[in-house]
Amino acid sequence: MLSALRLGQIDRYLLGQLLAGLVASTGGLVALIWLTQSLRFIDLVVNRGLSLAVFLQLTGLLIPSFVAVILPITTYVVVQFTYQRLASDRELTVMRAAGLSAYALSRPAMMLALISVVTCFVLDVWVVPSASAAFREEQFRIRNRMAAFMLQDGVFTQVSDDMTVYVRRRDSDGTLHGVMIDDARQKNAHATILARRGRFLPSTDAPRVLLLDGTRQEIDHQTGRLNILTFAQNVIELSSNKSTAQRFRDATEMSLGELLHPDPAVVTARDRPKFVVEAHRRLTAPLTAASFAMVALVAVLRGAFQRHGGLLRPFIAVLVVVGLLAVGLMIANLAARVPALIPLIWVHAIAPGMVCAWMLFVPELRLGRLSSLIPGAAA
Image (cartoon, rainbow, N blue to C red; front, side):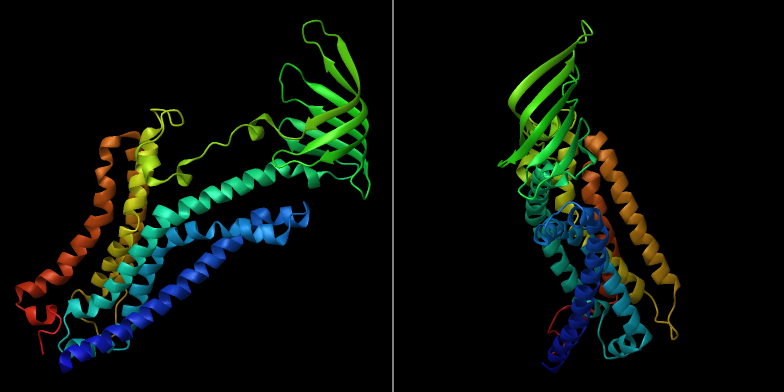
């Protein structure tokens, strides 16, 4: 009973340090990545009039994807750093001398890895697709309505790749004076629109402007003549043809069911393997957290303890994790081209952890230390 109590206290002690390190490192890296990525949208706040609340809402939708990507890596870093520090402070040596096996010592790290796996699974399968869809939808809506606050007095503003707008003056009530629009959305009907006045109309999608007392000038490509149409009122949408069309959902926004069984009307047969690979990546990516944690445990607990520590095994562990990340990207790219390689995605996620577990625990099984492998057996 005393042995089981002692083991429980050690588990809580190690798990507490691991959890604190994981939260701190993951939170710090997420904040850093969020800061660097959000710089792309700073211009919308400073120069384009986007509100701070919308900015925070838009960039906040990116955070779940950041956490899902870096959590397996921070799990490895925290396990490696914490156990390496314990080894340097001789705490692992004392625990080993007290009769604790590699399994007993690694159990808190495996608990941490299980927490990371479950968290990544929830993020990859449910949270990230929903957040990604909301982000792209909000970004699409902001881009289509951007022209309402992009226009500046006396400046040629490129609303889209095929439309440029010039406004001589803009009153406080929103009335536009001296409006010129270069409209190249229709390749065979490139038009220049001039108007004395104009104002924006309420719209839930693409911005629309009502032009008053103007002309539409267009060159007939067949005859080469300039056609001029005079109008009293004319409504123009300030958006490109692409933006007004239905937005295409990419693989990051789709659910597992949509990825494994894509709609033939949306996904071509050529692109279907990419969606299937994305589905398997979501299911296997969380498992890499456990594999990376096992790599760290082998680096610290495998072999004899060195009195003054050592850098060789931690350095090799870092190379192994970096190599696994690179191999994972390579396998995903190859599987998208050759669907028969999709099982390698699962092998890559599971095999390193199984190999490390065999290296760490099987030698103790062979030595007959079953009592230390079974919780409470020493009582």
